[in-house]
Image (tube, rainbow, N blue to C red):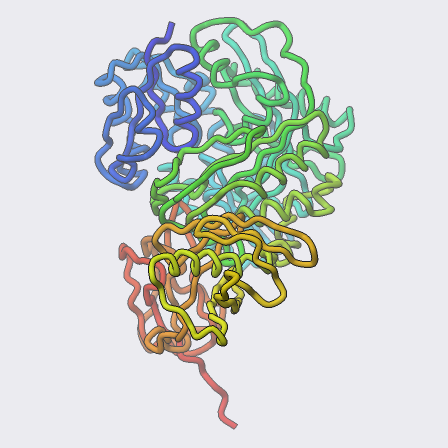
Length: 618
Protein backbone atom coordinates (compact mmCIF):
# COMPACT_ATOMS: atom_id res chain seq x y z
CA UNK A 1 0.00 0.00 0.00
CA UNK A 2 1.23 3.45 -0.90
CA UNK A 3 1.66 5.69 2.14
CA UNK A 4 3.42 8.81 0.81
CA UNK A 5 3.19 10.13 -2.76
CA UNK A 6 5.22 12.81 -4.53
CA UNK A 7 3.61 14.70 -7.41
CA UNK A 8 6.33 15.42 -9.97
CA UNK A 9 4.47 18.46 -11.21
CA UNK A 10 3.05 21.82 -10.18
CA UNK A 11 -0.08 23.94 -10.19
CA UNK A 12 -3.55 22.61 -10.85
CA UNK A 13 -2.66 18.96 -11.51
CA UNK A 14 -0.49 18.68 -8.39
CA UNK A 15 -3.31 20.13 -6.28
CA UNK A 16 -5.79 17.77 -7.92
CA UNK A 17 -3.57 14.73 -7.15
CA UNK A 18 -3.12 15.88 -3.55
CA UNK A 19 -6.90 16.19 -3.12
CA UNK A 20 -7.39 12.53 -3.98
CA UNK A 21 -4.44 11.49 -1.81
CA UNK A 22 -6.04 13.29 1.12
CA UNK A 23 -9.27 11.36 0.59
CA UNK A 24 -7.31 8.08 0.49
CA UNK A 25 -5.22 8.88 3.57
CA UNK A 26 -1.97 9.12 1.60
CA UNK A 27 0.60 11.71 2.70
CA UNK A 28 1.73 14.14 0.01
CA UNK A 29 5.02 15.65 -1.15
CA UNK A 30 5.33 18.64 -3.47
CA UNK A 31 8.34 19.80 -5.44
CA UNK A 32 8.63 23.45 -6.35
CA UNK A 33 10.93 25.80 -8.20
CA UNK A 34 12.07 29.07 -6.67
CA UNK A 35 9.38 30.82 -8.72
CA UNK A 36 6.80 28.50 -7.13
CA UNK A 37 8.02 28.77 -3.55
CA UNK A 38 4.71 30.25 -2.43
CA UNK A 39 2.50 28.42 -4.94
CA UNK A 40 -0.69 26.70 -3.84
CA UNK A 41 0.54 23.16 -4.58
CA UNK A 42 3.56 23.74 -2.35
CA UNK A 43 1.34 25.10 0.42
CA UNK A 44 -1.27 22.34 0.47
CA UNK A 45 1.15 19.39 0.43
CA UNK A 46 2.20 17.77 3.69
CA UNK A 47 5.85 18.21 2.68
CA UNK A 48 7.53 20.40 0.05
CA UNK A 49 11.00 20.09 -1.47
CA UNK A 50 12.75 22.94 -3.31
CA UNK A 51 14.17 22.46 -6.80
CA UNK A 52 16.69 25.32 -7.16
CA UNK A 53 16.04 27.52 -10.16
CA UNK A 54 13.06 28.98 -11.99
CA UNK A 55 12.91 27.62 -15.53
CA UNK A 56 11.39 24.18 -16.27
CA UNK A 57 14.74 22.97 -17.64
CA UNK A 58 16.40 23.65 -14.28
CA UNK A 59 13.60 22.31 -12.09
CA UNK A 60 10.56 20.26 -13.13
CA UNK A 61 12.40 18.68 -16.08
CA UNK A 62 15.28 17.52 -13.87
CA UNK A 63 14.29 13.93 -13.20
CA UNK A 64 17.37 13.32 -11.05
CA UNK A 65 16.39 16.14 -8.70
CA UNK A 66 12.79 14.93 -8.49
CA UNK A 67 13.82 11.37 -7.57
CA UNK A 68 16.26 12.74 -5.00
CA UNK A 69 13.44 14.85 -3.54
CA UNK A 70 11.15 11.81 -3.29
CA UNK A 71 13.77 9.81 -1.41
CA UNK A 72 14.63 12.71 0.88
CA UNK A 73 10.97 13.24 1.79
CA UNK A 74 10.32 9.56 2.44
CA UNK A 75 7.90 9.09 -0.44
CA UNK A 76 7.25 5.59 -1.71
CA UNK A 77 5.45 6.57 -4.95
CA UNK A 78 5.65 9.21 -7.69
CA UNK A 79 2.75 10.52 -9.79
CA UNK A 80 3.93 12.51 -12.84
CA UNK A 81 0.71 14.41 -13.59
CA UNK A 82 0.74 15.73 -17.16
CA UNK A 83 3.37 17.65 -19.10
CA UNK A 84 6.98 17.94 -17.96
CA UNK A 85 8.32 14.39 -17.35
CA UNK A 86 4.99 12.56 -17.52
CA UNK A 87 5.85 10.83 -20.81
CA UNK A 88 9.57 10.42 -20.22
CA UNK A 89 10.53 6.76 -20.14
CA UNK A 90 13.95 7.44 -18.60
CA UNK A 91 12.33 9.28 -15.71
CA UNK A 92 9.93 6.37 -15.15
CA UNK A 93 12.90 3.98 -15.07
CA UNK A 94 14.76 6.24 -12.64
CA UNK A 95 11.75 6.21 -10.32
CA UNK A 96 11.51 2.41 -10.45
CA UNK A 97 15.28 1.95 -10.08
CA UNK A 98 15.10 4.04 -6.90
CA UNK A 99 12.67 1.50 -5.44
CA UNK A 100 9.65 3.79 -5.77
CA UNK A 101 6.19 2.99 -7.16
CA UNK A 102 5.56 4.62 -10.54
CA UNK A 103 1.96 5.80 -10.98
CA UNK A 104 1.91 5.29 -14.72
CA UNK A 105 2.47 2.83 -17.54
CA UNK A 106 5.62 0.73 -17.92
CA UNK A 107 8.62 2.62 -19.32
CA UNK A 108 8.52 0.41 -22.41
CA UNK A 109 4.95 1.51 -23.16
CA UNK A 110 5.89 5.17 -22.68
CA UNK A 111 8.87 4.67 -24.99
CA UNK A 112 6.71 3.10 -27.66
CA UNK A 113 3.95 5.70 -27.57
CA UNK A 114 5.47 8.90 -26.16
CA UNK A 115 7.14 9.57 -29.51
CA UNK A 116 4.35 10.31 -31.96
CA UNK A 117 6.51 9.13 -34.85
CA UNK A 118 7.07 5.71 -33.25
CA UNK A 119 3.41 5.49 -32.26
CA UNK A 120 2.33 5.95 -35.88
CA UNK A 121 4.73 3.23 -36.96
CA UNK A 122 3.24 0.94 -34.32
CA UNK A 123 -0.22 1.64 -35.74
CA UNK A 124 1.05 0.97 -39.31
CA UNK A 125 0.76 4.63 -40.36
CA UNK A 126 3.47 5.78 -42.75
CA UNK A 127 5.09 9.11 -41.84
CA UNK A 128 5.10 12.03 -44.28
CA UNK A 129 8.43 12.25 -46.11
CA UNK A 130 9.88 15.30 -47.79
CA UNK A 131 7.20 17.98 -47.95
CA UNK A 132 6.19 19.30 -51.38
CA UNK A 133 3.65 21.88 -52.54
CA UNK A 134 1.20 19.05 -53.15
CA UNK A 135 1.34 18.06 -49.45
CA UNK A 136 0.27 21.47 -48.13
CA UNK A 137 -1.10 22.33 -45.68
CA UNK A 138 0.99 20.34 -43.20
CA UNK A 139 1.34 20.36 -39.45
CA UNK A 140 4.77 20.51 -37.86
CA UNK A 141 4.52 18.65 -34.59
CA UNK A 142 6.73 17.80 -31.62
CA UNK A 143 7.39 14.08 -31.35
CA UNK A 144 7.25 14.27 -27.54
CA UNK A 145 4.90 15.91 -25.06
CA UNK A 146 1.61 17.61 -25.81
CA UNK A 147 -0.41 20.66 -24.83
CA UNK A 148 -0.04 22.27 -28.25
CA UNK A 149 3.64 23.08 -27.76
CA UNK A 150 5.98 22.57 -30.67
CA UNK A 151 3.19 22.71 -33.28
CA UNK A 152 2.91 24.92 -36.37
CA UNK A 153 0.54 24.91 -39.36
CA UNK A 154 2.42 25.49 -42.62
CA UNK A 155 0.48 26.66 -45.67
CA UNK A 156 3.43 27.95 -47.74
CA UNK A 157 6.54 25.89 -48.47
CA UNK A 158 8.70 28.96 -47.83
CA UNK A 159 7.46 29.05 -44.21
CA UNK A 160 8.51 25.47 -43.46
CA UNK A 161 12.13 26.14 -42.30
CA UNK A 162 11.05 28.77 -39.75
CA UNK A 163 8.21 26.53 -38.55
CA UNK A 164 10.58 23.61 -38.03
CA UNK A 165 13.10 25.76 -36.14
CA UNK A 166 10.46 27.36 -33.94
CA UNK A 167 8.77 24.03 -33.17
CA UNK A 168 12.09 22.40 -32.25
CA UNK A 169 13.01 25.23 -29.88
CA UNK A 170 9.59 25.24 -28.21
CA UNK A 171 9.53 21.45 -27.84
CA UNK A 172 13.04 21.36 -26.38
CA UNK A 173 12.11 24.04 -23.83
CA UNK A 174 8.86 22.35 -22.79
CA UNK A 175 9.82 18.65 -22.92
CA UNK A 176 13.61 18.48 -23.14
CA UNK A 177 13.24 16.84 -26.58
CA UNK A 178 13.48 18.86 -29.80
CA UNK A 179 12.45 16.11 -32.24
CA UNK A 180 9.66 17.22 -34.63
CA UNK A 181 7.93 15.72 -37.66
CA UNK A 182 5.36 16.75 -40.26
CA UNK A 183 1.97 15.25 -41.06
CA UNK A 184 -0.94 16.25 -43.32
CA UNK A 185 -3.16 18.91 -41.79
CA UNK A 186 -6.83 18.08 -42.18
CA UNK A 187 -9.08 21.13 -42.37
CA UNK A 188 -12.43 21.15 -40.55
CA UNK A 189 -11.70 17.95 -38.61
CA UNK A 190 -12.86 17.20 -35.08
CA UNK A 191 -10.44 16.28 -32.31
CA UNK A 192 -11.93 13.22 -30.60
CA UNK A 193 -10.25 11.01 -28.01
CA UNK A 194 -10.90 7.84 -26.03
CA UNK A 195 -10.00 7.51 -22.35
CA UNK A 196 -8.55 4.12 -21.46
CA UNK A 197 -7.70 2.52 -18.14
CA UNK A 198 -5.82 -0.79 -17.91
CA UNK A 199 -4.66 -2.94 -15.01
CA UNK A 200 -1.83 -5.46 -14.60
CA UNK A 201 -4.26 -8.37 -15.00
CA UNK A 202 -5.12 -7.88 -18.67
CA UNK A 203 -8.29 -5.80 -18.34
CA UNK A 204 -8.60 -2.69 -20.54
CA UNK A 205 -11.46 -0.26 -20.06
CA UNK A 206 -12.57 2.31 -22.59
CA UNK A 207 -14.32 5.15 -20.81
CA UNK A 208 -16.27 6.76 -23.61
CA UNK A 209 -15.20 9.58 -25.90
CA UNK A 210 -14.31 13.25 -25.49
CA UNK A 211 -14.52 16.06 -28.02
CA UNK A 212 -11.68 18.59 -27.73
CA UNK A 213 -12.12 20.43 -31.03
CA UNK A 214 -12.14 23.99 -29.65
CA UNK A 215 -8.43 24.78 -29.56
CA UNK A 216 -6.17 27.80 -29.70
CA UNK A 217 -2.60 27.32 -30.86
CA UNK A 218 -3.40 23.58 -30.93
CA UNK A 219 -4.09 23.63 -27.20
CA UNK A 220 -7.53 22.63 -26.01
CA UNK A 221 -9.88 25.26 -24.58
CA UNK A 222 -13.27 23.56 -24.18
CA UNK A 223 -13.72 19.80 -23.84
CA UNK A 224 -16.74 17.60 -23.34
CA UNK A 225 -17.81 14.00 -22.81
CA UNK A 226 -19.21 12.18 -24.61
CA UNK A 227 -18.26 13.56 -28.03
CA UNK A 228 -21.56 14.62 -29.64
CA UNK A 229 -22.92 13.44 -32.96
CA UNK A 230 -20.81 10.31 -33.50
CA UNK A 231 -22.51 7.34 -35.14
CA UNK A 232 -22.59 4.05 -33.26
CA UNK A 233 -20.30 2.53 -35.87
CA UNK A 234 -17.71 5.28 -35.49
CA UNK A 235 -17.80 5.00 -31.70
CA UNK A 236 -17.16 1.26 -31.98
CA UNK A 237 -14.25 1.90 -34.35
CA UNK A 238 -12.71 4.44 -31.96
CA UNK A 239 -13.00 2.06 -29.01
CA UNK A 240 -11.53 -0.82 -31.02
CA UNK A 241 -8.54 1.24 -32.16
CA UNK A 242 -7.96 2.52 -28.62
CA UNK A 243 -7.90 -1.01 -27.16
CA UNK A 244 -5.64 -2.12 -30.01
CA UNK A 245 -3.17 0.66 -29.19
CA UNK A 246 -3.22 -0.22 -25.48
CA UNK A 247 -2.71 -3.94 -25.99
CA UNK A 248 0.03 -3.34 -28.57
CA UNK A 249 2.27 -1.96 -25.80
CA UNK A 250 0.90 -3.93 -22.81
CA UNK A 251 -0.42 -0.69 -21.38
CA UNK A 252 -1.09 -0.18 -17.65
CA UNK A 253 -2.84 2.77 -16.02
CA UNK A 254 -4.71 5.75 -17.44
CA UNK A 255 -4.06 6.93 -20.98
CA UNK A 256 -5.73 8.60 -23.93
CA UNK A 257 -5.84 7.67 -27.60
CA UNK A 258 -6.41 10.70 -29.81
CA UNK A 259 -7.98 10.90 -33.27
CA UNK A 260 -8.92 13.44 -35.88
CA UNK A 261 -12.40 12.66 -37.19
CA UNK A 262 -13.14 13.94 -40.69
CA UNK A 263 -15.70 12.82 -43.28
CA UNK A 264 -16.96 10.15 -40.88
CA UNK A 265 -13.52 8.51 -40.61
CA UNK A 266 -11.14 8.25 -37.67
CA UNK A 267 -7.48 9.18 -38.24
CA UNK A 268 -5.09 8.09 -35.47
CA UNK A 269 -3.03 10.99 -34.08
CA UNK A 270 -1.23 9.74 -30.98
CA UNK A 271 -1.50 7.99 -27.65
CA UNK A 272 -0.86 10.05 -24.53
CA UNK A 273 0.62 7.78 -21.88
CA UNK A 274 -0.59 9.88 -18.98
CA UNK A 275 -3.59 11.58 -17.46
CA UNK A 276 -5.07 14.31 -19.67
CA UNK A 277 -5.93 17.85 -18.58
CA UNK A 278 -9.54 17.18 -19.58
CA UNK A 279 -9.95 14.01 -17.51
CA UNK A 280 -12.57 15.62 -15.17
CA UNK A 281 -15.31 15.42 -17.82
CA UNK A 282 -14.83 11.64 -18.02
CA UNK A 283 -14.83 11.43 -14.22
CA UNK A 284 -18.12 13.33 -14.08
CA UNK A 285 -19.83 11.15 -16.67
CA UNK A 286 -18.62 7.82 -15.26
CA UNK A 287 -18.66 8.73 -11.56
CA UNK A 288 -14.98 7.84 -11.18
CA UNK A 289 -11.86 9.35 -9.63
CA UNK A 290 -9.23 8.52 -12.24
CA UNK A 291 -6.33 9.45 -9.95
CA UNK A 292 -7.66 7.06 -7.32
CA UNK A 293 -7.98 4.37 -10.01
CA UNK A 294 -4.39 5.04 -11.13
CA UNK A 295 -3.19 4.54 -7.56
CA UNK A 296 -5.22 1.33 -7.15
CA UNK A 297 -3.82 -0.06 -10.41
CA UNK A 298 -0.26 0.82 -9.32
CA UNK A 299 -0.89 -1.06 -6.06
CA UNK A 300 -1.82 -4.14 -8.10
CA UNK A 301 -5.60 -4.14 -7.66
CA UNK A 302 -7.64 -5.51 -10.57
CA UNK A 303 -10.29 -3.51 -12.40
CA UNK A 304 -13.82 -4.84 -12.59
CA UNK A 305 -14.57 -6.75 -15.78
CA UNK A 306 -16.64 -3.83 -17.08
CA UNK A 307 -16.46 -0.09 -16.41
CA UNK A 308 -19.38 1.74 -14.77
CA UNK A 309 -22.20 3.03 -16.92
CA UNK A 310 -21.96 6.54 -18.33
CA UNK A 311 -24.53 9.06 -17.12
CA UNK A 312 -25.28 12.47 -18.55
CA UNK A 313 -22.96 14.96 -20.18
CA UNK A 314 -20.03 17.05 -18.91
CA UNK A 315 -18.32 20.13 -20.33
CA UNK A 316 -15.05 21.70 -19.19
CA UNK A 317 -13.68 25.17 -19.91
CA UNK A 318 -10.07 26.17 -19.31
CA UNK A 319 -9.56 29.63 -17.86
CA UNK A 320 -6.32 31.12 -19.13
CA UNK A 321 -4.54 34.32 -18.14
CA UNK A 322 -4.28 35.51 -21.72
CA UNK A 323 -5.77 38.04 -24.11
CA UNK A 324 -7.40 36.24 -27.07
CA UNK A 325 -7.90 39.53 -28.92
CA UNK A 326 -4.13 40.19 -28.89
CA UNK A 327 -2.82 36.96 -30.34
CA UNK A 328 -3.52 34.98 -27.16
CA UNK A 329 -0.81 36.98 -25.39
CA UNK A 330 -0.25 35.53 -21.90
CA UNK A 331 -0.81 37.83 -18.93
CA UNK A 332 0.91 38.08 -15.58
CA UNK A 333 0.18 39.75 -12.27
CA UNK A 334 -1.77 39.17 -9.08
CA UNK A 335 -4.89 37.01 -9.09
CA UNK A 336 -6.88 38.96 -6.53
CA UNK A 337 -9.95 36.72 -6.52
CA UNK A 338 -11.22 33.54 -8.18
CA UNK A 339 -14.58 32.21 -7.02
CA UNK A 340 -17.11 30.12 -8.95
CA UNK A 341 -20.75 29.58 -7.92
CA UNK A 342 -21.89 26.34 -6.30
CA UNK A 343 -22.84 23.41 -8.50
CA UNK A 344 -19.77 23.23 -10.72
CA UNK A 345 -16.30 21.78 -10.19
CA UNK A 346 -13.24 24.03 -9.98
CA UNK A 347 -9.74 22.60 -10.40
CA UNK A 348 -7.07 25.24 -9.90
CA UNK A 349 -3.51 25.78 -8.77
CA UNK A 350 -4.14 29.31 -7.52
CA UNK A 351 -5.83 30.98 -4.59
CA UNK A 352 -6.71 34.60 -3.95
CA UNK A 353 -3.62 36.81 -3.84
CA UNK A 354 -1.32 34.43 -5.73
CA UNK A 355 1.00 35.73 -8.44
CA UNK A 356 0.77 34.54 -12.04
CA UNK A 357 4.35 34.44 -13.30
CA UNK A 358 6.09 34.12 -16.66
CA UNK A 359 7.69 30.70 -16.41
CA UNK A 360 4.76 28.32 -16.75
CA UNK A 361 1.54 27.62 -18.59
CA UNK A 362 -1.03 30.45 -18.27
CA UNK A 363 -3.92 28.15 -17.31
CA UNK A 364 -5.57 29.42 -14.13
CA UNK A 365 -8.27 26.84 -13.64
CA UNK A 366 -10.72 24.36 -15.15
CA UNK A 367 -14.43 24.78 -14.58
CA UNK A 368 -16.56 21.66 -15.14
CA UNK A 369 -20.34 21.29 -15.34
CA UNK A 370 -22.27 17.99 -15.40
CA UNK A 371 -25.96 17.60 -16.23
CA UNK A 372 -28.36 15.00 -17.66
CA UNK A 373 -28.11 16.40 -21.22
CA UNK A 374 -25.54 18.26 -23.31
CA UNK A 375 -27.72 21.35 -23.63
CA UNK A 376 -28.18 21.53 -19.86
CA UNK A 377 -24.46 21.03 -19.18
CA UNK A 378 -23.49 23.77 -21.66
CA UNK A 379 -26.03 26.19 -20.19
CA UNK A 380 -24.91 25.37 -16.65
CA UNK A 381 -21.24 25.97 -17.47
CA UNK A 382 -21.94 29.23 -19.30
CA UNK A 383 -24.04 30.50 -16.40
CA UNK A 384 -21.32 29.60 -13.90
CA UNK A 385 -18.62 31.37 -15.89
CA UNK A 386 -20.81 34.44 -16.20
CA UNK A 387 -21.19 34.60 -12.41
CA UNK A 388 -17.58 33.76 -11.62
CA UNK A 389 -15.66 36.43 -9.71
CA UNK A 390 -12.36 36.72 -11.59
CA UNK A 391 -10.25 39.68 -10.54
CA UNK A 392 -6.72 40.01 -11.83
CA UNK A 393 -4.98 39.92 -15.21
CA UNK A 394 -6.91 39.74 -18.46
CA UNK A 395 -8.37 36.27 -19.08
CA UNK A 396 -10.21 34.35 -21.79
CA UNK A 397 -13.44 34.17 -19.74
CA UNK A 398 -15.52 36.23 -22.22
CA UNK A 399 -14.24 34.13 -25.11
CA UNK A 400 -15.32 30.96 -23.29
CA UNK A 401 -18.77 32.40 -22.63
CA UNK A 402 -19.25 33.45 -26.25
CA UNK A 403 -17.96 30.09 -27.48
CA UNK A 404 -20.36 28.10 -25.33
CA UNK A 405 -23.27 30.19 -26.65
CA UNK A 406 -22.22 30.18 -30.31
CA UNK A 407 -24.72 28.41 -32.62
CA UNK A 408 -22.05 26.10 -34.06
CA UNK A 409 -21.10 24.90 -30.60
CA UNK A 410 -24.60 24.58 -29.19
CA UNK A 411 -25.53 22.50 -32.26
CA UNK A 412 -22.44 20.30 -31.83
CA UNK A 413 -21.07 21.26 -35.27
CA UNK A 414 -17.67 22.62 -34.11
CA UNK A 415 -14.29 21.61 -35.50
CA UNK A 416 -10.63 22.50 -34.97
CA UNK A 417 -10.96 25.56 -37.21
CA UNK A 418 -13.62 27.15 -34.98
CA UNK A 419 -11.44 29.99 -33.72
CA UNK A 420 -9.87 30.61 -37.12
CA UNK A 421 -13.34 31.47 -38.39
CA UNK A 422 -14.94 33.16 -35.40
CA UNK A 423 -12.25 34.70 -33.19
CA UNK A 424 -12.91 38.31 -34.21
CA UNK A 425 -16.63 38.04 -33.48
CA UNK A 426 -16.08 36.10 -30.26
CA UNK A 427 -13.70 38.74 -28.88
CA UNK A 428 -15.77 41.78 -29.89
CA UNK A 429 -16.42 44.08 -26.89
CA UNK A 430 -19.76 43.38 -25.22
CA UNK A 431 -19.42 44.77 -21.70
CA UNK A 432 -22.41 45.99 -19.71
CA UNK A 433 -22.83 49.65 -20.79
CA UNK A 434 -23.61 50.71 -17.21
CA UNK A 435 -20.51 49.07 -15.67
CA UNK A 436 -18.34 52.23 -16.07
CA UNK A 437 -21.03 54.31 -14.34
CA UNK A 438 -21.20 51.79 -11.48
CA UNK A 439 -17.41 51.99 -11.12
CA UNK A 440 -17.51 55.79 -11.04
CA UNK A 441 -20.33 55.91 -8.47
CA UNK A 442 -18.58 53.42 -6.19
CA UNK A 443 -15.35 55.40 -6.46
CA UNK A 444 -17.17 58.68 -5.81
CA UNK A 445 -18.78 57.25 -2.69
CA UNK A 446 -15.44 56.12 -1.34
CA UNK A 447 -13.79 59.46 -2.02
CA UNK A 448 -16.64 61.57 -0.71
CA UNK A 449 -16.61 59.69 2.60
CA UNK A 450 -12.94 60.53 3.03
CA UNK A 451 -13.16 64.19 2.02
CA UNK A 452 -12.45 63.80 -1.70
CA UNK A 453 -12.76 66.68 -4.13
CA UNK A 454 -16.15 67.84 -5.42
CA UNK A 455 -17.22 69.98 -8.35
CA UNK A 456 -19.65 72.86 -7.92
CA UNK A 457 -23.20 71.49 -7.74
CA UNK A 458 -24.11 72.70 -11.21
CA UNK A 459 -21.29 70.81 -12.91
CA UNK A 460 -21.29 67.03 -13.34
CA UNK A 461 -18.18 65.07 -12.42
CA UNK A 462 -16.53 63.09 -15.18
CA UNK A 463 -14.54 59.88 -15.18
CA UNK A 464 -13.03 57.91 -18.04
CA UNK A 465 -12.59 54.16 -18.22
CA UNK A 466 -11.25 51.67 -20.72
CA UNK A 467 -12.66 48.18 -21.14
CA UNK A 468 -12.20 45.66 -23.94
CA UNK A 469 -10.28 48.23 -25.97
CA UNK A 470 -13.02 50.88 -25.81
CA UNK A 471 -13.07 54.13 -23.83
CA UNK A 472 -16.13 55.24 -21.86
CA UNK A 473 -16.78 58.64 -20.33
CA UNK A 474 -19.39 58.81 -17.59
CA UNK A 475 -20.97 61.80 -15.87
CA UNK A 476 -22.62 62.03 -12.44
CA UNK A 477 -23.22 64.64 -9.78
CA UNK A 478 -23.70 64.96 -6.04
CA UNK A 479 -27.02 66.45 -4.96
CA UNK A 480 -28.84 66.72 -1.68
CA UNK A 481 -30.67 63.58 -2.69
CA UNK A 482 -27.38 61.70 -3.24
CA UNK A 483 -25.61 60.63 -6.43
CA UNK A 484 -27.47 61.06 -9.71
CA UNK A 485 -26.63 60.27 -13.34
CA UNK A 486 -28.35 61.23 -16.57
CA UNK A 487 -30.81 58.62 -17.77
CA UNK A 488 -30.16 56.21 -14.90
CA UNK A 489 -31.64 56.31 -11.40
CA UNK A 490 -29.14 55.53 -8.65
CA UNK A 491 -31.03 53.32 -6.20
CA UNK A 492 -28.02 52.64 -3.99
CA UNK A 493 -24.30 53.38 -4.14
CA UNK A 494 -21.47 52.62 -1.77
CA UNK A 495 -17.85 51.61 -2.25
CA UNK A 496 -18.71 47.93 -2.89
CA UNK A 497 -22.28 47.84 -4.24
CA UNK A 498 -24.14 49.99 -6.75
CA UNK A 499 -27.78 49.47 -7.73
CA UNK A 500 -28.98 51.24 -10.88
CA UNK A 501 -32.42 51.46 -12.44
CA UNK A 502 -32.85 52.01 -16.18
CA UNK A 503 -36.14 51.69 -18.04
CA UNK A 504 -37.78 50.36 -14.87
CA UNK A 505 -35.25 47.50 -14.46
CA UNK A 506 -32.92 47.39 -11.46
CA UNK A 507 -29.47 45.81 -11.70
CA UNK A 508 -26.91 45.18 -8.96
CA UNK A 509 -23.21 45.83 -9.50
CA UNK A 510 -20.58 44.49 -7.15
CA UNK A 511 -17.46 46.66 -7.35
CA UNK A 512 -13.96 45.69 -6.22
CA UNK A 513 -10.64 47.53 -6.20
CA UNK A 514 -7.25 46.29 -5.07
CA UNK A 515 -5.22 49.48 -4.85
CA UNK A 516 -4.68 49.75 -8.61
CA UNK A 517 -6.29 51.63 -11.47
CA UNK A 518 -8.27 48.52 -12.35
CA UNK A 519 -11.87 48.22 -11.23
CA UNK A 520 -13.86 44.97 -11.31
CA UNK A 521 -17.61 45.40 -11.80
CA UNK A 522 -19.45 42.07 -11.80
CA UNK A 523 -17.76 40.26 -14.72
CA UNK A 524 -16.41 43.42 -16.37
CA UNK A 525 -12.86 44.68 -15.88
CA UNK A 526 -12.21 48.39 -16.35
CA UNK A 527 -9.10 50.52 -16.24
CA UNK A 528 -9.55 54.04 -14.86
CA UNK A 529 -7.95 56.55 -17.22
CA UNK A 530 -6.38 59.85 -16.17
CA UNK A 531 -8.37 62.99 -16.87
CA UNK A 532 -5.51 64.36 -18.95
CA UNK A 533 -3.37 61.99 -21.07
CA UNK A 534 0.35 61.97 -20.31
CA UNK A 535 2.20 63.40 -23.33
CA UNK A 536 5.32 61.47 -22.28
CA UNK A 537 3.47 58.23 -22.96
CA UNK A 538 3.75 58.68 -26.73
CA UNK A 539 6.06 56.27 -28.57
CA UNK A 540 7.92 56.55 -31.85
CA UNK A 541 5.87 55.33 -34.84
CA UNK A 542 6.96 51.86 -35.88
CA UNK A 543 8.07 50.89 -32.37
CA UNK A 544 7.91 47.19 -31.58
CA UNK A 545 7.01 46.81 -27.91
CA UNK A 546 7.07 43.60 -25.91
CA UNK A 547 3.41 42.50 -25.67
CA UNK A 548 4.08 40.42 -22.56
CA UNK A 549 6.79 39.68 -20.02
CA UNK A 550 9.21 37.07 -21.26
CA UNK A 551 12.65 36.23 -22.59
CA UNK A 552 14.05 37.03 -26.03
CA UNK A 553 15.00 33.58 -27.35
CA UNK A 554 15.79 34.45 -30.94
CA UNK A 555 16.51 37.38 -33.22
CA UNK A 556 16.21 36.92 -36.99
CA UNK A 557 19.52 35.85 -38.49
CA UNK A 558 21.60 38.75 -39.76
CA UNK A 559 19.21 41.38 -38.41
CA UNK A 560 21.06 44.65 -37.74
CA UNK A 561 20.22 48.31 -37.52
CA UNK A 562 19.91 49.82 -40.99
CA UNK A 563 18.54 46.61 -42.53
CA UNK A 564 15.51 46.73 -44.78
CA UNK A 565 12.61 44.59 -43.60
CA UNK A 566 9.29 43.76 -45.20
CA UNK A 567 5.85 43.97 -43.59
CA UNK A 568 5.05 40.73 -41.76
CA UNK A 569 8.67 39.56 -41.67
CA UNK A 570 9.45 37.71 -38.40
CA UNK A 571 12.07 39.69 -36.48
CA UNK A 572 12.07 38.66 -32.82
CA UNK A 573 10.84 35.66 -30.84
CA UNK A 574 9.80 35.90 -27.18
CA UNK A 575 9.24 32.94 -24.88
CA UNK A 576 6.62 33.35 -22.18
CA UNK A 577 4.71 30.72 -20.22
CA UNK A 578 6.35 27.87 -22.18
CA UNK A 579 5.18 29.20 -25.56
CA UNK A 580 7.07 31.13 -28.22
CA UNK A 581 5.57 34.33 -29.60
CA UNK A 582 6.68 35.85 -32.88
CA UNK A 583 7.04 39.62 -33.33
CA UNK A 584 6.98 40.76 -36.95
CA UNK A 585 7.67 43.98 -38.82
CA UNK A 586 4.49 46.10 -38.88
CA UNK A 587 5.43 47.81 -42.15
CA UNK A 588 8.02 47.59 -44.91
CA UNK A 589 10.87 49.89 -44.00
CA UNK A 590 14.24 50.35 -42.33
CA UNK A 591 15.18 48.95 -38.94
CA UNK A 592 16.39 52.10 -37.23
CA UNK A 593 16.85 50.60 -33.74
CA UNK A 594 17.34 47.09 -32.35
CA UNK A 595 17.37 46.65 -28.57
CA UNK A 596 16.44 42.96 -28.44
CA UNK A 597 19.26 40.53 -27.68
CA UNK A 598 19.00 36.79 -27.11
CA UNK A 599 18.51 35.99 -23.44
CA UNK A 600 17.23 39.42 -22.46
CA UNK A 601 14.35 39.48 -19.96
CA UNK A 602 11.70 42.03 -20.89
CA UNK A 603 8.56 43.47 -19.34
CA UNK A 604 5.37 44.47 -21.20
CA UNK A 605 5.95 47.65 -23.15
CA UNK A 606 9.73 47.24 -23.39
CA UNK A 607 11.01 48.74 -26.65
CA UNK A 608 12.50 45.94 -28.74
CA UNK A 609 13.03 47.59 -32.11
CA UNK A 610 11.88 50.43 -34.35
CA UNK A 611 10.95 50.09 -38.03
CA UNK A 612 10.71 53.34 -40.00
CA UNK A 613 8.26 52.95 -42.87
CA UNK A 614 9.54 53.40 -46.42
CA UNK A 615 7.30 55.87 -48.16
CA UNK A 616 7.11 56.11 -51.92
CA UNK A 617 8.19 59.48 -53.30
CA UNK A 618 5.68 61.18 -55.59
